[in-house]
Amino acid sequence: MIVLSRPSIGEDEVQAVVDVLRSGILASGSRVEAFEEAFAQKIGVDHAVAVGSGTAALHLGLLAMGIGPGHEVIVPSFTFAATANVIRMVGADPVFVDVDPLDYTISAQAVEGAITEKTKAIMPVHLYGHPAPMGALEELAREAGIDLIEDAAQAHLAKVGDRFVGSIGRFAAFSFYPTKNMTTGEGGMITTWDEDIAERTRMLRNQGMAERYVHRLVGLNERMTEIEAAIGLVQLAKLEHWTERRRQIAAIYRDCLYPSLGLPVERPGVRHVYHQFTLCPPDRGPVIAALERVGIGYGVYYPIGVHQQEPYRHLGYHLPVTEDLCERVVSIPIRPDLTDEEIAIVIDTLNEVAP
Ligand SMILES: Cc1ncc(COP(=O)(O)O)c(C=O)c1O
Image 1: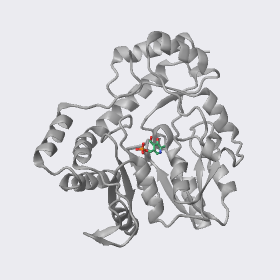
Image 2: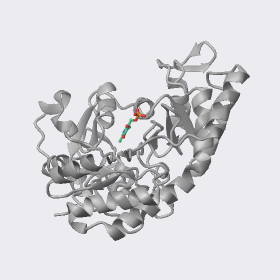
Image 3: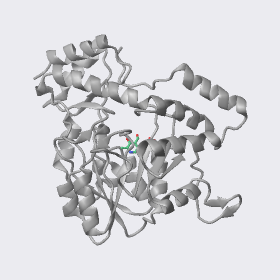
């Protein structure tokens, strides 16, 4: 079986966890601080705030910005439901727009048509590791006087020009779920150049405390543990190498797979980090059947648009590109530890059923 994804855990991650367990300090401590510092430095932002998940990173960031009832946030529907759920959780309304049919990220043109006087922010998703059209979105946000927030859950070390994603919006959210390009088990990170957002999210993750038992805000417990941060520090040091390997596998797929399978696009001037390598054939049925026959893992991200899910269906959105992609996409293995032999098996299997 060639599995779709699995976390890369070496002896150094194991040793880092053992060291934490022996230290007796398991909740937030010096390792969390070190992880935040290393992550902020890598992404090129002033502040990184470690939290319990990517969802928590989005949720606390929205709370810190004061987004709530009466506000609208423009998002793609072709994403994981967390992107929209956090908007609802703070009492605001997600406004769904369609995605670009080539790179599957939010369409700047569709965003422009969706801005109203209630719009507080645009929240693009760097889906599958491909950056959203940040230049155009920055311009739209500036003209409308609204904020830009990045859902960077799938895009560690992706770049727009020479800027890492996560350094562009007012804040960004990363996820360290085990299938992501790097993991901490569960975990997330808020990155921001805005000192106020950093200060407020630090309080919000810790019951709103500014100092011990002095509560300035109503907050939650969304702290990262020392165990998670210790894994994160080791993984972060390997991430550049893993990213290059993902890009190398993508280049091999691009050279060898038949274009009729619907290969993913990499826009000029961006660095795609291939969290997923996603095909979009006219009919994914025969492709999936072949992958199953040979024992190759695959995933469908996402089979149903968020706008079609139960909590949002009543809003009555119709997004033709998203709905078409939901019927056709299929992601194939691109984890950095794939062997050349496994890559060859994937290529042969797919080319045999290419339309
Ligand atoms: C686009 C997107 N946003 C948000 C999240 C939420 O991250 P987490 O699962 O760490 O809460 C994910 C992760 O699955 C995601 O893919």
